[in-house]
Structures are given as C-alpha cells and as structure tokens.
Image 1 (cartoon, helix red, strand yellow):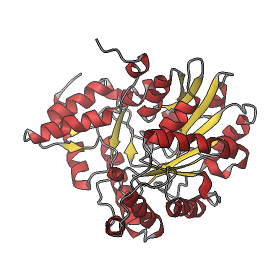
Image 2: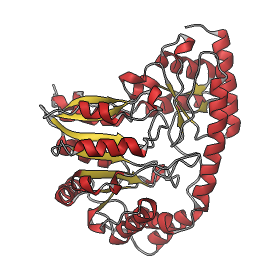
Image 3: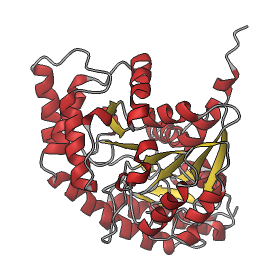
Image 4: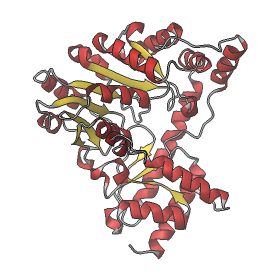
Length: 392
C-alpha cells in the first residue's frame, strides 16, 4: 500500500475553485448560474498585451529563460515599482514567477518548520494557512475584524509575536474583505517590529492599485527599516486581467534572493518566455484598459453594497479595495457555508462562505463583483427571493 509523507495530508485548498467547478457542472446541466464566487476579472486581457506574446512567439522566444526571469521583465517591474511606490529597487532583487502563489509557497517553506509559528490574516487568502500547515509550522491567525474596517490592528498583531515566530503575512488591499490597512496602522506595526528582528514579513500587494474613493494602498517597501527582511508579492493577474497567464513577480532582500532562485530551479525552472514579454507590454504600454476596468469595478461596487444592504439579515461595509465585498449575514440565521451552498444549488448564485477564508470568516460571505452589473443585480434579486422563501 502506498503511503505518502504526513505533510501531504495537511495540505488544504482554495474552495473558490471547488465552487467554480460545481457552478460549471450545473451550467453544463442547463442551469442559469451567476458566478460571484471566483476572484477573476471578467475582462479580456488588453489586446496590446496579447499581441506582445504573439510577437514573442513569432520572434522565436521558445526556450528557457533565467530562473529569475528575463532581465527586461525584471527591469519593467523596477520601473513600475518606482512609479507606484516611489521606491527604487534593483532588478537583482526581482523574481518573475508563474503567478502569485509560488511566492507564498517559497516564503512559507523558507520559514516554516515544526516548532515555529507563522502569523497570517484571518479571514484571509486560504493558501496562507494551507502552506503553513504543510510545513509543520503552527499557523497563528491575525484577526481581521469588521469593526476595524477589515484592517489588522498593529497592537493586536504585535501581541501575537513570540520567540517562535518566523514570518508575518500581511495583505492589503485584502482578499476576501476588500479592506485596506491605514498607513498609520502600518507605521505602528513597522515600529513595533523593531523589537522582533527575527521575524520576516511577506506583504501580499497583488491588489495594490485596485482602490476606490481616493484611498491609497501603502506598500511595505516604503519602510527602509524592514527592507532586509521584507518579501513583496505582486503580479499581473488582477490589474491587467491576466489570471490565466500565470505570471507574477516578487521583490526579495539580498540574503534571501539566491534561496528563492534555487527553489525556482528545482520547482519550475523558469516562467514561459512569451508570457514575460506580455508582462513587459502590460507594464510599459497604455493603461487605458486598466483605468476602464477600475471604473467598471467601482460602479459595480456601489451596486453590490446597496443591493446587499437591502437584503434581510445582511449588512455590508463598503470595500475600499480589490473587487470583493464581505457582507455580514448573521442576521439571516444561516451558517455561512450552508447559505452559500444553498444559494448555488437552489438559486443559481455562486458565492464563497466566509469560513473558507478562516475561522473568523463565519457569519460572512465573499461576493466577487468581477461580473457584469446586470448579473450582479440578477444575483441580488435571486438571493432576496431565496431568503424570503427559505429559513435555515
């Protein structure tokens, strides 16, 4: 009988993909399904980006690239980082990777081991906890509370650090809540980290420019005092509607860079060449499509918040970033995952129950407004009809 090592029994998953699979199955059965579950822009990748990949293929870019990514792609990330954060980084600290998750994996396996602790946001992206448990480290949730506008508390976060803590994971703008951490709170956290030089920081900034109402995300890169232990995760998937291209980047301190390079050599060799040329075009080309997409998300956001707050038993804060709302559904009397499942099976609306993002997600449901205004309005109408007809 085959027997795998125990670590593989500890791996979790991202339930949004399970919901997507079930929604797709129901659609194939002829059901009309509205998917507000998956965190994927419903826009096409801008045409000039697609053409850059096609040109790269026609120009013969068919082979391996350096494990760290082609220099031109890393230099494009340097330019983009300077434009967004005002911070100049070296291309020798930039890694091009096949999406955002490889950066999470690399950082967590670098610092996670039995006997250590890793702090992560809860509710938060489920792969954080999954990978922490895979390494044998103890996952320590950092509460992300509705009463704080779905931002972490610096004081509470710092109180969770122990001599066993090796890594702190932050995410702003955040999945699943749409929260944006205030700069003042980040400054308090960075100041407090001076007393904990043994703790590395992974800052997931994949939604960095996806903010609203004049809100600005604060990159951890602007704090030089933690640059020697800071890993910044970012990528192309969300901003340029390139989820299927599997293309991300991260910025590493000098002492960790060669470690992640070696991991790349062992795990994925390199990122496919044409995608990297597409990534350069995304950064350096016109941003009209990005701006158009953000205007659409902003309009949908307002419709979602108004609609959800009009449902019995729902209350919804206005998200400040990303393209998610995280309504409180406790007033309905339903448990979150049971409600999400019933809405998919009976009402044809795909959503993600809050507990899929952590133990503190109970009482909430994630709503992705990466869908058309028409579908969002139809989905809210269906949810309202379901709540009127069904009791938990």
